[in-house]
Image (cartoon, rainbow, N blue to C red; front, top):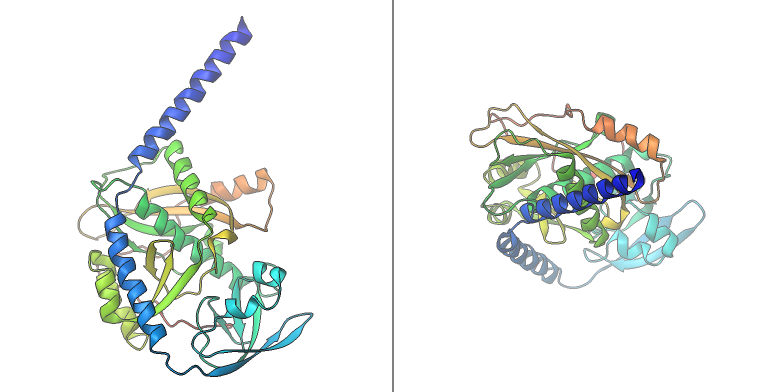
Length: 340
């Protein structure tokens, strides 16, 4: 009898958990397709315009200097990307490459066209200089967390993405700050689990992560319905030759200095660990800090060790708290030097 009772209880708990997850999925089903469509039409149109203005195709010489191989490639100036180059070097190099290294001094997004001849190498998760790769991974996770948060709520819950601080692996979590029309929301474990599942499902789509430098007016048009982005854009452009660097993953577009991972398939284990209401002076609805932790697909960690990382990621991240005074003032230049 005891076994039957325990089995019955387990079945009830299982049914309840499934029902809760189903309810959360319905509650967390966003209706942002129209805004996505508007933004994507502008992005794709500008991307096409820039490609059409390249004009006469000029050739550039790319010297690949890998650990075990050296190769010269002839590519197209302002058209060919590091990812185009790495496709000539075999699946192993292509699949593991996180970010390009130009002339041993600057890092470059894998899908960003190359403007001139250069010496090219590729950094990966087991490269000697892991701090650069870790920052690229962490930055991308924050970017993706913004996409998950943006898609998480029904249209009747007003939401505006604010920003995310520069990547700091030592902080214990990647974050995205979101203004959300929910008072004193404290997500349950089930809700956090659903957010984590949606994060994983999103990455399993294997979206390439595109980038595009645009004029300030284009960026303002794309983000005209987000008051935080429109406030940040002029300052970002002023520090970057009146340009703003945008990244696109699937239908989601955001602002970042970059570079990012080349594809969401680099993301392996991931947990949305906490959502914490921040104490800020930003007017309107509350600002929440979404926090998470993740591992690259090729990095394995036992359950106990990963649970310790998850525990740390639940603590409020001490990264810059957004405020009403001052805008996001990060250096938005695309090329980040190896010494940074």
